[in-house]
Amino acid sequence: DISTTNRPGARFGPRAIRATAYEPGTYHLDLGLEIFDWLEVVDFGDAYCPHGQTELSYTNIRERVHAVASRGIVPVILGGDHSITWPAATAVADVHGYGNVGIVHFDAHADTADEIEGNLASHGTPMRRLIESGAVPGTHFVQVGLRGYWPPQDTFEWMLEQGMTWHTMQEIWDRGFKDVMRDAVSEALAKADKLYVSVDIDVLDPAHAPGTGTPEPGGITSADLLRLVRQLCYEHDVAGVDVVEVAPAYDHAELTVNAAHRVVFEALAGMAARRRDAAQAKPGPPAR
Image 1 (cartoon, rainbow, N blue to C red):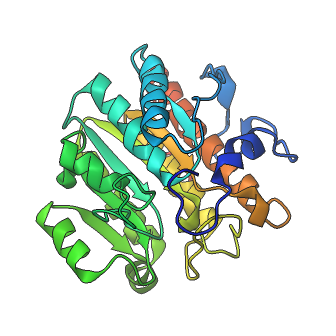
Image 2: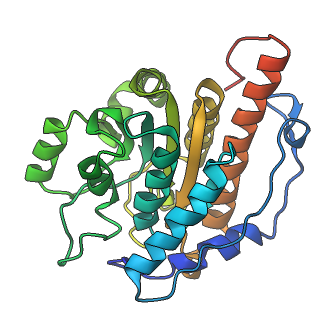
């Protein structure tokens, strides 16, 4: 929450996602598998983020994620505002090599501002910081779900100069989600050996996820998001996943918390199916 610009409360997201009241089973109907027959999952606890101490918080996040990724484990990080992606994805790049990680970024906003209100570490700047540092080149980004009225034109011109790829909600409306999904998956496959998936829950329409700091009407549905996250984690060698910007105070009927929880489960399901099919030499995409 240190770098939130609109409605605070994302710092309570991890607690709410962990404690979601509606706990499902673990057998995936579409994939026909028991997720935890193929994956071992451990809660590694929280990175210490003292309020108001941005640099120390980011150092702690980076070290915490590095401790997981350096052991060959895929970190799944729960935010928190979207600024955490800067240290988290940097830690993954530290392990796998700068330039060897691509990011598929689901969001209503590009998060490529140079600074916001004088803050270089805002939740609206992490993707720019990753590009400028060399951790993840602009050519290795695919963004899905952009809409609304921000950032301004000059920021999009900078994004073009960096070679970034993005798919707006207008494109999804015009072409259909399945066609855009196929493009996003193939584009991500072409970018790098390792994939990091970053999900800002405000990519969803506020009807599906009201509990977030900067809701933007006109987003995708939870059904579409879950299937695309699953497909990405099945078809790619995933090196990290984050789910951010869940602010439970603004939620209704736990819609947002449950959606975020299912994003994590679908990411795990995709990774489990990839491992199962590799072990059984059974190629082919999972059911969508």
